[in-house]
Length: 297
Image (tube, rainbow, N blue to C red):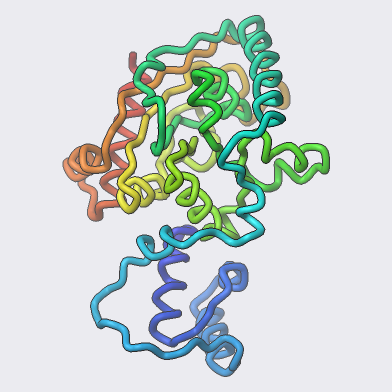
């Protein structure tokens, strides 16, 4: 029962009982007993009730509604859609230093950047094996595309005051998918609806053995509901360079390869042939197949 399922359950309970339910409070629920107690408490709390409205009986599209809603103001303050002079300068200096380091230490190469459209909206979805994956993708991107691209990053990595002050310049959206998944999805949707590009790791965590792991359905939900293409990408050699079991990286050749843009419809067809039961699952499975294919080139 993952975070995406939790959001759908919250929306269903809110609709059924006419309540306002906090995602943070809901994250504390472990058992069915916890669930019933929480709902009972909210029903008896006047501040948690919302006005009853005439709602249609058919099933609502939870994600379509949520993704058309802007994130909280606190999240919007962390997103700058137009890069400032300072952001451009910080990006240029950072990428320049990383490019030199990657070339010398990893013999870094990248391929097929011509597959990347010059303008958004679309998502770039790579495999995920090391701490440096987002930086490998960023260095490989052409300058114009790089300045339009936002990456999602776990909040815990950006708590240090010095880092926290420049994440906006780096176009990193700090999120906690375990406790604030709705904010994360709405922030991603906000960037895409403003015709920008999002770098998103469908595995949601680093691979334990270097192989492509199972995917969360977030990318599939965003692709379908916002009708945006996905660029599959594969990072080769990063696991050997810095597996999650190692404290420090070691020299190893790293390559990044970008695939061609894929529509949600194209990925859905592939996923359905693999036994997917829903559109979101089909798109997700189709994307994983595309990334797997890139790993064999």
